[in-house]
Length: 250
Image 1 (cartoon, rainbow, N blue to C red):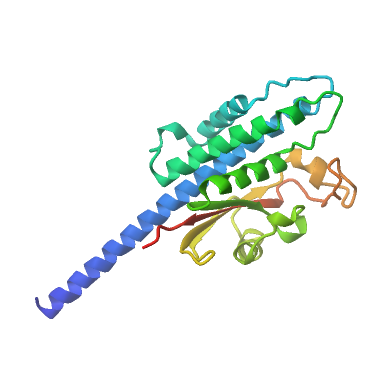
Image 2 (image 1 turned 90 degrees about the vertical axis):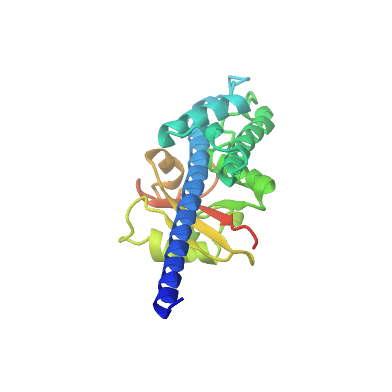
């Protein structure tokens, strides 16, 4: 082969490799975003049912694992136009979504006595708690494939286990929390985590009006959960869903 032929072959090989890497990153991004949207859908169901959950005069609320999961899947389908059960069950995305669905059902069913307790008003079974419990259960199920964590800027973290790691902190401070960062835009990159090659995605979340009863004004006032309010405004960056997808070992 001529020198020109060798150079051309190498160039073509690099081009094909680049395309393969882009396709892999696009697939990883889609997987991470769909997993984040499933968690968000589940939390929104709990948010929408806070009055029912906290009603001291009603025993059985009817919010079983199957009911909550069905409502979450309906919201997920509306936001993604994807039926998670249609995703190949043997694919990484299929395994993660199914594990997420199992986690939603299991966590809800395990807290039925608490949810249905009569004579008690505020149950503290709020979206933030539900989200944390789901991600912890997911870690138990698929820790070899991925890690999912709900974190936030350090001054907003109420649970020490949710503190951002070094990568998350840099992404929050240098990107997501800056005035220049486009609202809602994720950040993703290949980055080593725990000694393994990984693809990491940070999904920003912003305070909605419903969040401000606990996180809004007046700053410092103790909210219903026992924490001081942060004085946040609607639309402020309030949290980050951090997803780490581990790459297969070579």
